Structure formats: structure tokens, C-alpha cells
Length: 477
Image (cartoon, rainbow, N blue to C red; front, side, top):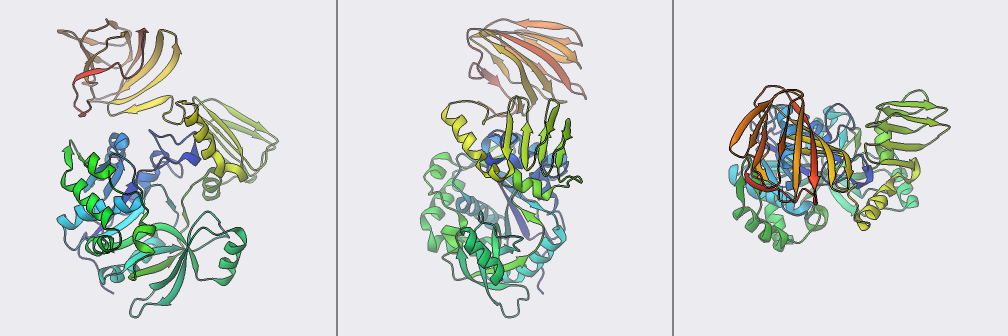
């Protein structure tokens, strides 16, 4: 069996989704892949961590520009330095994302083999995944676009299927693809399970960058052209590669399956049984987590009485249940979801209602993460609000001023360095300062520990738009 030269497989991790079916934990600004749902690591960290062997180059991450600082922090905290973090100005589905990665990597390494995979899936048997990659590699190097067919565990109607054809000569474990099948109804899914040879399409692929671009230019030339322009006109922003917004916005949105895989004659499948789940709903997450004797999965401060086969999670207050079965209860600081397990796929409809009502609970949590740390609103009334701010070691907020609000700061832990107009002062625990409307100011942490303070804002407008930045180490406008 052929082996890739050292580091020739480039993991390309797609991290653009928002995971609406896992609301209220998953939000637009802090989505599912950035949450520790399956272990102490976030799903993104789990995905990157299982691709650390000598066979693999550093991963290339494609993400929403709003998530760039959090993605970088998650990778840094597990000692992974990415090949690049590419910022999408707008979501365009998986085909353009794959094209952008292939264009970048082919330029850096003409022999680059891409392992394209989502950031938010669970793989409970990574050794089986590695074995499947080893089986797929010779086929990919020989010009096949390889997809990984997930061994079905039941008649699932929420996934597309791949029908396996005959085994490819001299490629053990690698088969031709007879057909890609759309999401089936229940009876059809049952027939697939009985017939065998049908696998779930998990959205994981292995191919050379050169082969993928050749097929994309033949089958979807408009996507290829727009992506080449978006990369050619891209800019470097701190540690990020920012795609050109105009060019990428003009790119048609399409999945890699529709744009290439279902039309190409050079597609192969490697079946694999690796404990895979896309954890696309609370029900799916419940299935892959350890359960107690009553079939319950719990997290946080919870007490259950006469409750079975349920998922109960609290991020904040004590949650108690009595007499529940097959139920999902998720409590965050600002929202509570109660759903039957069977209806958990429909949580996304609640998110649609929140969007339609112009509410903010689908966008961000009460605790909002920033590159310098985080803040959480404790109280908000007409003309004033109270926040907790936490700055990481070495962090500093932009030099800024406000036209509509004044701010009072009280340090509750650590030592804060404060710029007030022309003066710079250090404030210790229980010391405070006042920032009048229109005064230039900055908050900084020059220590090796976190700094926390209470901020009281007062004025006729308290929104985040009332920030005029003059200097920012994170490159924000």
C-alpha cells in the first residue's frame, strides 16, 4: 500500500455552521463546534486533535469571520498551529469552501492531499477512522475523489446515502460508487438497511487538491472561477487569511456533493464503522453520551426524580425534573428549552421564530466572548446596564470613546491598567474610576492572571455600535 510522504495529508476543517438544532447552547456567535458537548474539549478541538499524526500536515480551518478569535484560541489551547485560518465573509456551502482550500494548498504543495471534514462531528473510534484513511489514500493519490461511507446503525431518514458498487482492483477496502441517494423516507431507509451495501454520507472526503480543482472546473466552472478570484484578492489580517468579499459573495452556493461528487466519474467510497455522529440534534447527542442506569444524560447542577431516557443540562441555575421520560431540558443563563426527544430536530423552528421576532437569543449568550476575554450583562434597564468584564493576561480593549454613554468601572479581582484621556492609572481590587461621555479610554491587563471588573454604563444609548475605535491590537474597525 502506498504511503503519503511526510505530512502530505492536509486536514481541511469546515467550521462555518451555526448548529441551530442545538439551541439554546449553540448560538450564531458561539456555535455547536465551539462547545464541549462530547468531552472536555470542544468539537472543533476533538476534530483537530484526532489528526495529529506524522501523516498529517497542520490543519487548514475555514470559518465564519465572526468566530476567528475563538477558533484561534481553541487551537492554541491544545498546541495546534494551523496551516491557515481562512475567513469566509459569507456562507456559501461546502463546494466553495473545499475549492478555496484546494487553491491555497495546491499552491503551497503541488502534491497536497486534502482530508475534508466538518468540525462538529463525533467519532468514537478514531482508530477505525485512521484505518479507513489508510485504505482511501492510494485511491486518492491515483486520482479518485474518495468519500467515507458511514456504516448505518438504524433506518435514519435524516442522512443521504451512498450505494456501494464493486471493489476497486488493487485497492482493498475501496469501492466504486453505484449511486448517491437523497434522504429517504422511513420505508426506503428500512429497505436500505435490509439490503446492505448502503452507507450514510457523512460529508468526509479525501482527494488531491489538483484532482478536485480539475473536476470542479469541468463540472462547476463558475464556482472555481469565483473562488480563484476570492483567493487571489484575499488579504492577510493578523493571523488570518480574509477572502475577498465581493468575489466570494458572487460565488454560487452549492454543496460538494451536488457540485462535484454526484457528477464525477472518478468517485470511490471507503465504508467505515467508527462510532460516527453528526450530533445534529439533542436526541443525537443523547445517543452518543454515557447514560446512568435510568438512561439519563446530565450535565451541570441538576437533580432528577422519576426521570428516564432524558437529557438534562444546566449551564447556570439548579434544574430539577420530576416524572419525565424521553425529554430534553437545556437551561442556559438566558433561555430554557424543554422538548420531547422525538421532536428535538424541530428546535431549529424555535430559532426561526426568534429571528422573525428580531430577538437576540439566537445570536449570542448572556456571556459574550471577545478576543480580550468576555463580558456578561447582569442587569439592563432604561438608560443603564451592569456588566461583568473579564480580561485575559496580556489583553487590552481597544482605545475608544463613546458619544452616548458614560462608564463606571470597579475592579473586583486583579490589577487593571486604565487609560483615561491623557492619564494612565493602575487600579487594584475595590478601586474604581469614571469615564465621562466622549473621553478616550482603554482597559488593559498587564498581569499574568485574569482581571475582572464591574462596569456600569449610563446614557441614552447603550448598544455596542456606540464604540469609536482608534487603536486595536485585534484589527477590528
